[in-house]
Image (cartoon, rainbow, N blue to C red; front, side, top):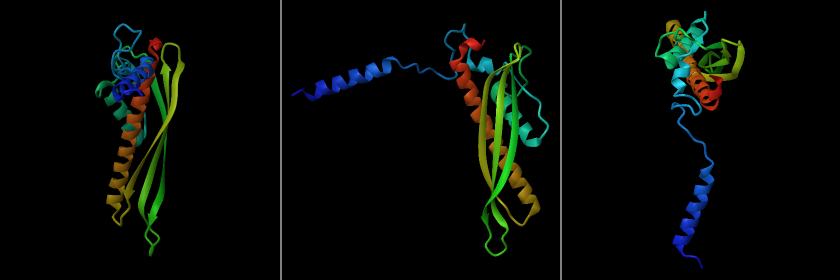
Length: 177
């Protein structure tokens, strides 16, 4: 009968073999196969399309802050990020006596496209969504402010998701350069 130590060592050896083919790497580190390029340097090369609506602008500003610290893309932008945003609301709680909604669920859906500026080729497409709820009250200003806060929370959540998905794309496609 094998000793406890032998079983433990065997288990560690099998676990080590399983990890031998693992290609885990830091998401924001230097990308393999490049001459020191990082995900952050790729982010700085993304120009985010201008937007007109308030929620679209909140999303654009959040993305620009994530990519460049708040400024526009550098002068030599290699990528263009285009997105289409839609939002909807639904009543999720209704006051029993007056049938007035008391809780609103806001949903933001975004379709995005990463485009290579030089070739006008779409490199990545994706969709992202976020939900945020707010309380509906009898005060008009409070409702407006609550809706704006919910829109901001949802837009920033979508921006975080898009940033992670773009970082993953750049980390796994170093040949895009």
